[in-house]
Every structure is written in structure tokens, then in C-alpha cells.
Image (cartoon, rainbow, N blue to C red):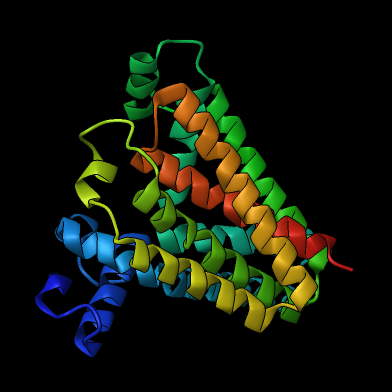
Length: 260
């Protein structure tokens, strides 16, 4: 999977980036997640909101089908969240759990980083996952109407996946090895493209007030987590990127649920 074979603005490069993003972020048979090279992953950040929109659409379909079977909104919300988790292979949820365990630990920086690499999930990680799934399902249940749920889910997944490329472009790395270091850094223009694409999707689907509130909530949630990561471990890791996607997704859905 080599998107770097084309100039960045060549149509073939855009399609190659989409394939890299789908391979990384979903379980679609686009190639193994570890097959892309660093320049591919870094540049593919610009189209990750498109992959997010597709993931949101999968969740919306699951919510609609569940409602059609007569299931109550909260159960339909849980089914929708489960569908997105299955579709992505719990890629970001895994990062959230590891980040919560590491940042929550009363330990030195090196020990926190070691905890984040441990495949076992601790108390903080388990609670973070429960809150993430619960808040997302509850927000969807509060929205309830299938059409409104669909636009909220698509917007949430698109906006949330615009955040990691920005972090990768401008924030410091916590360590020199690992998934995040191996992925490289997007050019600032590519990070801006991702942010712009995520914002555009939200603005097209949500009413203006809700879209602005959703973007602000996602940015504040991601910024707060990044500040905590910088204070605790010195920057971001691949797990932190996953956690940032999760808090962004939750923030957007809560903003959509709170909309009048």
C-alpha cells in the first residue's frame, strides 16, 4: 500500500489515501493495518474524516434496524455503538483504555508509558470504556429519531477522526518508538485539510448552532486530554491518539443530544 507513489494532489493519491485510511481505521479488506508505510499513514490523515463518516453510517444503519425491530432507543444506541466497534475492531477503544490506565497511574513518566504498553486492562481503562460506550449510547437514545441519530453519528465519527492528524502534525511525541512514531507526521496542510473536511461534514449535516457546538466540544475535549498527556507523559502516543478520537466522538454526540 504505497500512496506516496503519486503527487499529493493526483486523483490516484487521494484514492490511495482513502484505502490507507480504511485499512487503518476499519476492518474492511483494504490490506493489513501494518502494511502501510509512514508517509502513507501521515498523508492519509487528510481523508480520515471520510472513513469516519462511513463508520458513522454503519452505526446509523444498526440504530435504524434495531428500532425497526421494536427495540427501545437505549438498546438501539448500544447496538449502534457495538456495530461501530465491530466495524473498527475496537481500534480507538483499545487506545482509550491504555491511555486511561497510563495517565491515571500514580507513577513516574517511564512507568506510565510502560503501563500503556501492557495489553492488560486496569481499573481506569475499564471505567473509561464503560463511560465511553455508555455516554455514546445514552446520547443516541436521547436523540432517538433515526434521521437525527444518523447525522449525529456521521458527524461525530468524521469530526473525531479529524483530530488525530492535527495532534500528529503539531504536538510532541511522548517517545521515539511505537505506532505513533512509526506513522510519521502529516504536513500542516494535510492536518488542516482533515480538520476542514470534518468541519464541512458536520456543517452539511447538522444545523449551524449544533455544528458549532459540536466542533467546540470536540476541540475542548481533545485539547484537555492532550494537555493531560503532555503533563503526564510528555506528549502523545498511538494510544493517546485513539483516546482523543474517543473523547471527541463522545463530545460531539453529547452536543448533538443537548441541541434543542
